[in-house]
Length: 117
Length: 408
Image (cartoon, rainbow over all chains, first blue to last red; front, side):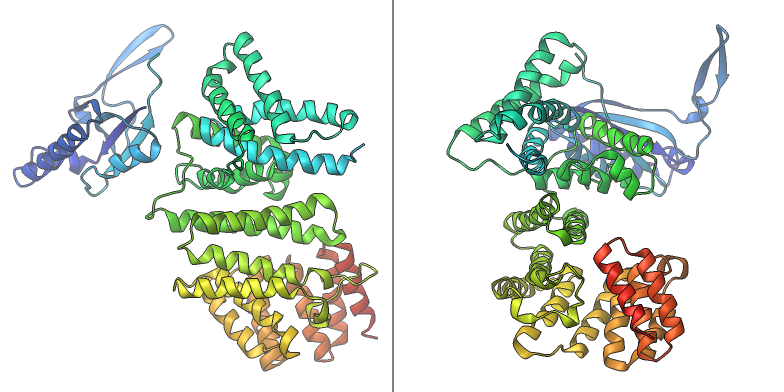
C-alpha cells in the first residue's frame, strides 16, 4: 500500500538549506534518509520543494482564475517535500516517517494514497 | 422455543467473535459489521421459530456470506470491500469446519481501537461497540453525547482504520504499555457494567461479566510476560468470589463488612492469589495489581475472621499516588477512617475535587456513614438521602434509606 510522508518545515528549516553553517548537516540527514528508503526497497517517489516564497496559488472565483503570489495558507509550517513509500500498513509507514531527521518545529504527516486502480 | 433473552445472548456472543475475525482478516470493520448485521436480523426472525441452530456461528457466517455474494453481484459501491471480506469469510468457514478452536481475535480488535492514529474520543466507544456490541445510542448516552455525534465519530474512526490500513495486531513493545492500559481499562469497564447490573443475576449482564473474565484470560495467554493483565484477572476473580453474598436471600444489598465469609468462593480466591503472586514475580508494579491486592486482603477475612485495615489503607495510599481517580480517593478515605478514625476520613473527603465528588454516590454514602459514626445524625441523614438519590441500583437505594431510617 502506498503512503505519502509529508514534511512540513518551519521558516528556520527552509533557511537551513542554504545557511553555510547548517547546510551540510541538513542535506546529509535528508539524503541518508532517502538512501535508507531506497535500500529497504520501499521508496516509490518524492520531491523536495522550494520554499513557500516561491509558491503561486490559483483560486477560482465566479468562473475566473485568480493567480496570486504565496502558498494557499499562511501557516507556521509549510510543505517542504514529500516521499511516497510502499509498505504493508500504517504502522510500517509511521515507523518510516518517524525516522525522518528531526529538527525543531518540524512536523511529519502520513497519508494513505488513493488506490491506483 | 428460546426466550428472547437467551436468543439475544447467543446472538451477541456468537456474533462478537465472528465480527472480530472478519474485521481482523479483512481490515474493514464497517463492512464486516454491515454483513453481520444483516445476518443478525435474519437470525432474530428465524430462530424464534426454528430454534437456535447447533452452531450459531456457522449459521450466522453462512447468512453473512450469502449477503456478501449478493452484494457483490448487485451493488457496485458497497461491493468494493467485498473481496477481502469474502476471503475472510471463507477463512472463517474453514476455521469453523475444522476440529480446531475458532480463533478469538477480539483482543486484536480491542488493540486496533487503541491505536494512536484514532481520534482519542472514539477509542473507548469503538471498543464498546465492536467488542461488546453495544448500540451507538447507548454509548452516546454514557458519554453524554448526541447519538448522531457519536455515530459520526464511530464511523469516521472505522473509515480511518480501513483507508489508512491500521493493522489489527498486538502492538510492538515500545507502543505496548500505553495501549495495553486502554485495553485493561476497557475490560475492567466491561466487568464493571456487568457487576453493577448483575444484581438480579439476569443473563445478558452475567454474560458481560463472563466476557470480561474471558478477555482477561485471553490477554494473559497473549502477553504472559506482562504483570498487569494478571493483576486485572486477579482483581476480577477476587470480586467474583464474593458474588454469592452481595445480596441476601431477599435481594437486599449487603455491605462487604457484613457479608458472611462462609459463602465466599474459596477456589476463586486461591486462584486470584496465585495470579497475583505470578504478577509480583514479574516486578512490574501497577494499578490493577494494587487493586487486586486490596481485594485479596479483604478476602483474607475468610481465613482470619478479621479485616486488616492498616494494610488496606497502605495499599490505597499507593494506589492514590498511582491512579488518583475519584473512586480510589473515596475508598482510601474509607480505609483511613477505619484505621485513624471517622474525623480523618471526613478530612480526606473534604480535600476531594469539588463539583465532581458531589455527583458521586460513594462519596455521599461514605460521608453519611462517617457523620453517623460521629453522632451528627442530621447531617448524616441529608448525606444518606443524597447518596440514595444518586444510586442507580434499587437494592442499594433501599439499603441507604434503611440506614438513614436507623438514625432516629
